[in-house]
Length: 356
View 1 (tube, rainbow, N blue to C red):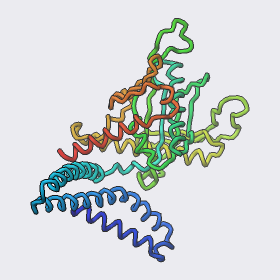
View 2 (cartoon, rainbow, N blue to C red; view 1 turned 180 degrees about the horizontal axis):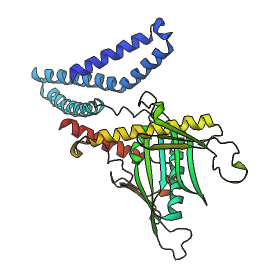
View 3 (cartoon, rainbow, N blue to C red; view 1 turned 90 degrees about the horizontal axis):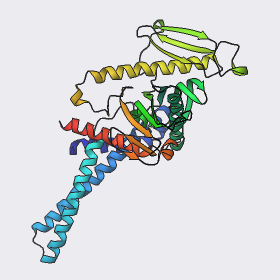
View 4 (cartoon, helix red, strand yellow; view 1 turned 30 degrees about the vertical axis):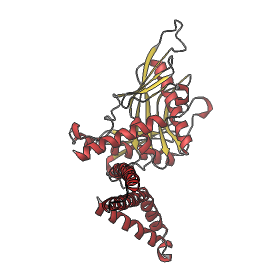
């Protein structure tokens, strides 16, 4: 590990030198790439330098003890030795985690899909609640959300919605939200006050770029049709909605949210690429034995991941056991305790996998 850390520090210092070079600074694309690499190494280099200092301090204390100090000095040195050994162990643990291979998609934007599941109109209302929750969470993080396609059923309910979240590290924060989300509450239409259980499914896909997945033009079927709109005067007379189908896999994507056919085609293509990339990632995961998977759950829509209990104002994540007793705040986008708990679980699983 020492040699690897030395190489990383050397590269960090090399990048700092390159960014200070006037010739390099004139190349915008190169500067951008170097700045990203520098930022990705910053935490690791900081830990490496801290680790080296702790090791040096430890050696200094051990050397002092070997020289046979007086009784008072020896007691102080042994106390410091104990503290430094604890500090060294902590930094080592952080370094092992930081040195683990990263998910290459972590820094990507995401495409999120929410679909009403079992529960009729109540499931549609819950799907709308989830969309609002994720929109608020994105807002808290300074990210942007943009609807790509939505199928609303009236009364504020959503049958399905596809939207994009743009922000640094969006996928790393949201990727574990995939799965079945369950709600327990008394529907507005329920006169007897009986609690109903409904569900909605969430899928989180890393937004794929053209370089991530190769799609041949001849493998695409593009259909143009009139947007369904929201009724009344908003229904467009010009056909601008776009459906793109990847013929070899049957995977399709629709966008009708924009008034421009070109923009709808661009968005639909982004969703299609992301769905195909997600399928490829899932295929790769399936090739790895169950015992060596480092992901949190399977990401399958059928896997129950979280329950929102209205009568008890409780939200529970079934993978980490993290529970909040302030459901209203969670639905306003305060998801940090769930997100960080899932990230920590993922890191722990990956570390155990690396050790075994």
